[in-house]
Image (tube, rainbow, N blue to C red):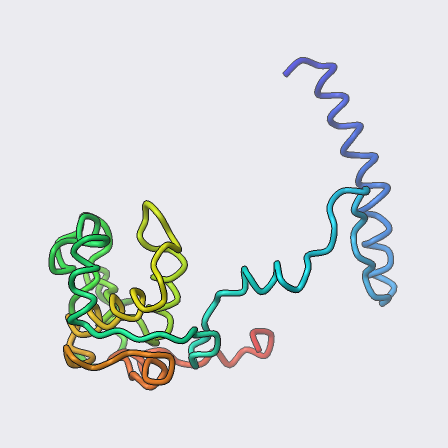
Length: 196
């Protein structure tokens, strides 16, 4: 970058900081509510419909789960077609994250033994988090393309492979939050007041 461009960039940054950042910092330091940043005439507020279309996260208690259903038997075919190329035929081969495996030693051993794999059956504390992650992020090549019934079925299949639910157990928006993962009690609440 030549000297003129650098000087122009530095000047622009300084002007922006004086015009935007300094007043915000000043009002915050005086205990006043921080005003919203300027929009510079660009963009608009999102509509309720636009927000709802992107509001797809699911809580550990199942809040946000859509209606649907699936069993491990149904999920096996979906897994073979959409997941096995990355995670292996049985979820243990990879090349990407290994999904299947249980550690029976009591306590949370992951910090003491870095060789332990953080699989669905050994690490994840909530089954709803498994559903949420698959729904938003998988399959890797086309995330978010599975229908809710397919996500329930794949989740059921992975939970069954890990010995968490029986093969014909039906997962749906009511039964999924009731599934207790093997390592649920391995996680402890964070007592610090600033994380509440």
